[in-house]
Length: 460
Ligand code: F0G
Image (spheres, rainbow, N blue to C red):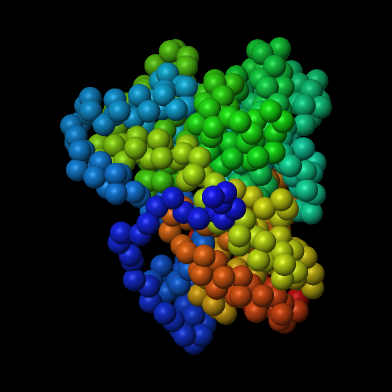
């Protein structure tokens, strides 16, 4: 039988019970949380679509792997299994474990970036850009223009515009560019992929200019899914083959394994250059831990090594992205504006279009996420002006074209019925969108403000 559904290649062995809340309880909870969904208590949330980070369901094999934890301070057997898995599936020879992705970003930025450098990338990510700035660098966006247009149906909105790289090198010179950083399945663009062809062009550009190519591989398997579905001559390649091919085109990788690789905590910095590895080992002991655990328990490295293998399975990734598409299509059919094409890890309703009466400086996406929670107990995240933060040099707000909320789907956690409830909740909120009020800051942290900022409603 030829199957068209995206049904899951697993069945459920244990469940986690959820608390149901009333509208009154949620009213009080969101007020207490300063209208920031990051400040809600998880027990007050019904369907938690805040993030796909660290919230996936591990397999029975991964849980069994925890029992094989070798908690030696140095030379844990699990480190060697992790290192071998990274080389086998991702091609990188050397692996430095870190407690999560930003630990790897910190080490890499400190090693490679000097004061006054420029770091081009296919759209910013919050923690990545901050570490680049803290190391003295300036992030430069070189993603294709279509990525900033929520309605463009370009199949590879994660692509780099090579013309923008050329313009940067003309302006500042290759010596001021320590590396180009490309993310696979670009988070802030809406989970949008980069094509193999574009990546090859970026590789050639880097070779021509003697610049390293760094890969934020947090969601590389999802990117491989879109390459297999959309790119010419790729439909017969397996996800595993495409993932390997992507990685092999790059020199260094930072990984938040809390996403693709389905562990609750962990990450790594991986590379092929032995000198860079030596420098990373020297720094990881300062910020994370010894180079054979880097802030992870042995058992967590074991679960990660197993998760890497599971993440590149074709049936797994098709079901994973299939579920995201299912939710996206339900919203689309209901006329709710979302980022198109539907991304790999999340659906991104467009707050700018849903709440045109709220100006961007009154945080429409933040207000929409708060209202969605209040209405339904579904927790989303703001991905707009609050997340974008302020310009490091001028102190002015970045004003991104994309003013979105993110309905992020954890891997292997929720059912199709949960997706239906989420769609119904969004429709309910959309019906009375014109009555949603904007917000203003009560407390604004200096760095990564979206995590802990507090707000109050204000009539716009
Ligand atoms: N790079 C990307 C593309 C990410 O999405 C994240 C985390 C990181 C790096 C940092 O990794 O959290 O392990 O330190 N993204 C999470 C999210 C927080 O919700 O999108 P980390």
